[in-house]
Image (cartoon, rainbow, N blue to C red; front, side):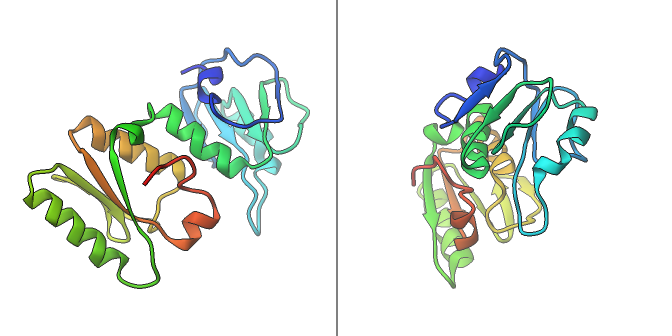
Length: 191
């Protein structure tokens, strides 16, 4: 997919370089970048993805999304908030599958897992193809993805939604943690 298609509906400050470049994958981890990837720089408490851009480029990144202009000879998309941009870019990369799915969010301090699975079971017993994403992992029919977080990061989340939709899911029930809301993991999703 071309970079200019990936940044559709993304609020960005400035695009530097050609946006007609082909993107083969998305990465937020400079150690996991593959040739043709878009590297998205995130800031955390103990790290700043901007410090790893050179490593990402050396590993094959062909463009970056960042919050400040960097000295690079590959395209840069400068955004105010990389986390929000990542959610929308991941959605675009995975064909905006969430738009064709009925999305149900379960939010709260206690009982998210039980409630999500109850809703899933009710819907499946009513004959509706349903997936669930949460603390116990992501499930759709016989497919299972091991959990690493209650609400996966946007790249993994949108990939999972894409796979579920491709295999016939009509509804996805998601546990949405306060942490996920704070870090805008569900930006662009409509529940």
